[in-house]
Image 1 (cartoon, rainbow, N blue to C red):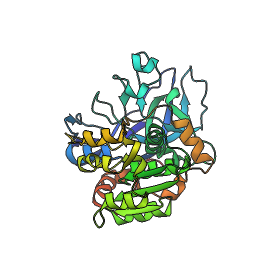
Image 2 (image 1 turned 90 degrees about the vertical axis):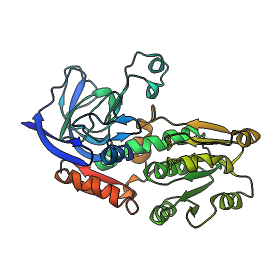
Image 3 (image 1 turned 180 degrees about the vertical axis):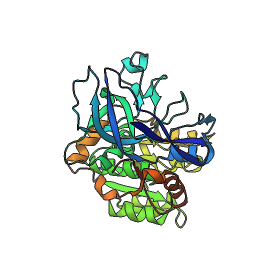
Image 4 (image 1 turned 120 degrees about the vertical axis):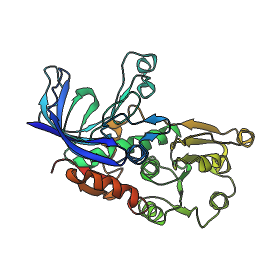
Length: 348
């Protein structure tokens, strides 16, 4: 039996190829992949061949939002069984560096993250993967494998909410409700945020956010975002502001929206230089905190979905078959104004 995968020989083009099946090591399992989501970083590689200065290696395999079923066990595997459905956490840290020893494995300089250019690491857009047992998280019966592939962006949103120290009653603002902003919104709602304000330039995103938890939606093309936020917070600003658009412009404006003594969380990680009014921020004594992926989140994310606290089922992504991966990426780019999430079904 051969393993089929989608490689990217050049930007904007995916080619289905056939290669040898992976051989699992003692602490690995063989996963029959079922779903792979298309992330913003995948789209950057597909459209531009790079993210900033980090170029995609030759014949790159994209995808890091994935889930599937265990079909083979390594000799030393103890926690998983054949037939278990699992979500794959895409970053495998070294386990021995300063950051790994402190439990901050998302900051490991040697982490091998699926579909990342540095160090070059192929992604999940393939039929079978050999993967370490410790980074495969079993899904309960009431959590679908489709939901399992969305645990990765949910983990980002939940980690962002944790970094912002969201708690019962706090007023929260989320700038940008693409997938990551949307997952952040679901997370802060689950954590008891008192008032959730979201801003975006796309009406379909605002409509969906309103249906699934936002108390106030602001169309950034039609309204003065600062004026509306201050109006909704009695002139005080928000306890926590999340920048999830990934834009230097929106990140530079976050100081305007935050309350005195509040927190700004940089989730979108805007590229390039960002001019910032640090003097104004200092007068508010507000913090800026950053999010780099996540750590120790997958079990909590799976539990939240299993208990119905976070309704991933309601997202209803657009799904394409594996053979139409090229079409899926083109659709995800062309229809980004209409569809929140695009997913590739690798196996039926």
